[in-house]
Length: 90
Image (tube, rainbow, N blue to C red; front, side):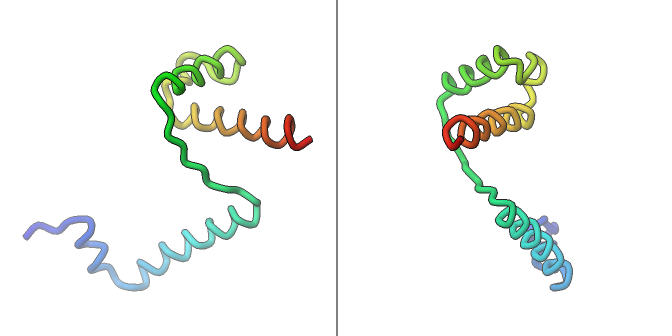
């Protein structure tokens, strides 16, 4: 039998698992305290391309940055944050 990641995690000492859980809980509490909420969105490819185009035209992303999914998510987050916090809540 070959060890797998799941098998290794199951055999890990409880302290190691507790440390990971504590770090996750600490980060989770910090996000809640900061008032952050997680939103997971599913959008069509057409909408995705449209958002990329909009962010590029607005100067939030360059063509090369648009290829990096994390940068796209960060720019989209900033755009939604601006629209929700400044434009509509103001």
